[in-house]
Amino acid sequence: MMSEQRRSLPFSRWWLIAAAALAMGMAGTFQFVWSSIRGPLGVQIGTTEATLGTLFTLVIAVQTIVQFPAGWVRDRYGPRIPALVGTILITSGYIGLSVASSPITAGIAVIAGGSGAGAIYTVAVNTPVKWFDEYRGLATGVITMSYAVLSFGLIPVTRGSILGTFQRTLLFFGVLAALTCLLAVIVLRDPQSDHNTTKLIEETTTVTKEYNWTDVVQTWQFWVLYGAFVIVNGVGLMLIGKLIAFSDAMGLSTGIATAAASIIAIADGSGVLIVGGLSDRFGPIRTAGSSLLLSAVGIAGAVISGAEGTVSVFIICVAVAGFFRSPVFAIFPTLIGEYYGRRYSSGNYATLYTAKLWGSLFAGSIASILITRVGWSTAFLLGAILMGLAGLSIFIIRPVSNPN
Image (tube, rainbow, N blue to C red; front, side, top):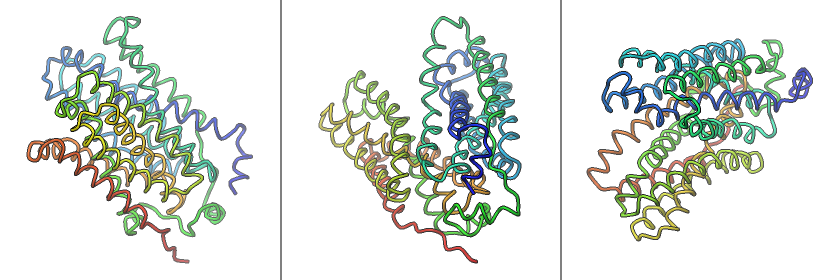
């Protein structure tokens, strides 16, 4: 079935991955650009740091929530409708922020842009599930990696003098988002299928039933994945977001803290591509479980080496923690497609992705309270334990038993 669908394409499937990766990268800029624009935006709309923090939280929340309706539409009507709506929204978000004059208008722009980024994300990340049996982990890794990597390339350029002003910078991002995401709208498509070909589609997966999200949440495998995903997001975001403060608390220099923050970003992007690709060879369960266990070792090692002041070991452990945390973002979409079928894979993964909301809550408020109560080292060691438990839990997962 899949070979027949490949022949129906007028070009290689990897062009679909390239288009999805470009769109995914532009979706990522709406999150990562905040480190560069929050200061000028605060001056423009006349607000406080606390309000800017709330706006950023709103970006993450909206981006996560909108993935379910976008995925639902994509599974039933193809990728072009949600991708087009996402393109309009993310472009509107950038333009809206460029002219925002108050926290309210900035909030409206944030909701639009975050919604667009979420729609683009779910369309892009689920494209390999629709088209690939082999190399699915690698293809998903390429797309997921671009979410951050494109921002690392674009944002330093826009912070320079070539664009002149804050408003022009945001308009530049808006135009770039429109062009790249419209390219995805034109290129992306799903394999042709209808109710008469469902049986053929099922033969290319390990399932004999196409599960929708209401079926998925009734399986214990989903809740194991969900719990692990909460931990991966919570502990991972705590590590990334509080790494510089943690380094300071360990008595390390500002230069070491900055270097560690840069390295973990590079490691995070590299891991999702490299280890995601390895999952095609070693299997998603074995790869994801082992990866999270190694991430736990890295976090624990960073705590111990940081307390001892062993700088080189500290940086290596931070890199290990980031490198092995991120691959689940490439593996879990493929696992959802493998266990529950391709047909509703976008909506099913979007349901799993809501775990990021709870993870963000842990990484923010809960982690801050925990650090205040028990200290930095204990809090991060607890994070290592949780990450290890998440890794162990993956190994108990077995394919879903499918009724005939």
